[in-house]
Image (cartoon, each protein chain N blue to C red):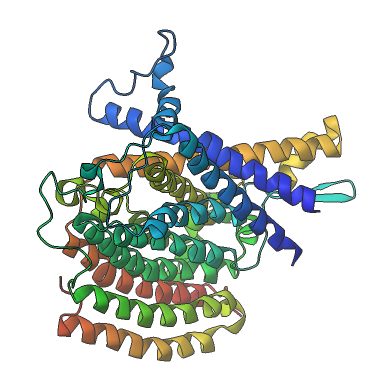
Length: 383
Length: 116
């Protein structure tokens, strides 16, 4: 029991920190180069071979590891050391509840591909992710530098503002799925719904048979599109990456709360930012993009199709592989989407950022909750 | 409680990974302390004012708004999860709950608490 949990936790941690993190630092450089018509990362090379710049992450780590750890004179040394740890540890820990596969039955045993299947999964991610904001605030406070302090305060105000709305934007999905457990949300999305069923609200019952036959996956994205846009905006703002990078805006605050950081301590801030990109992608995938499921092919259908040839356990194993591949493919897609947004949009002004949160997203998410409730009542989904 | 084992393990792994990275740097990195390095970074100038002084009251206001709205928002989660079972009466109930919340938001809006 403990061993299985250990293996599952090790797997997800290694995939994220050992694979996604280095690849992401490379993707960030390469995609920005592509979008800005530059050649991009190609300098780091080993014996003259640079393999598209894929050695850059290795060079990064070596550089960060061998840099001096300069702590400014008036800094609070303990908090200065703790801040990057507080920023990085919770972000990695958020992966405990994100399922990267479903529940599979091998003979008598069962295998559920999630490190910790707790019944308040989404709230766990929120709680843990908000811990990371302490990292930025403490870094700003401990550094004894005006730029750092301003960056830290900005980070605090931005992150707590978007935390409120981030929770509210997801409430419609809680209503639709009736659970906070991410694995149950994934299972609920492993099916299809008629694409034009919502027209019943307008009293359009006699649809042509052709339209009735069209079905779409029951993904959160299709069940509640406004929530997807609102949630993605909020959680990207929570991550403090451009266009929401006010706390570290280079042109105003040098480097914001990380101004007085060097070496691996700075590296940990860098790490937490990139891992949070993966957390965002995992969470969006699990809630809105069907998690590990494969569109139009439910788990039972996949196993049923393979079973006659190879037997049940092989079929289940193949299904498991398909599902894990599907999950990480979707995660890669959402990461690409975030990179696209990050390199396309200019930075917000601070008043625009706060207006967007309190005057646009907060009312819109409240409206969305009630609109969802009315639609669910009108469709007769509710008792 | 068994399902929380994964959470603990991942926390332990995260502490090991991040702590390990800092520990390796401790071994590899040079240590040469100079007076100039100890100064806070201000593009080469000596700082005119010390940090850790007073800053905009706006930030306190946002923190207060956060407390108010986050506590109120947390009522929406359990309501959302059981909405399917409770049905229309629950919608009326949460409507009544939302009215003061929206009135409060409008009041702050009109008072200029949301202006920057």
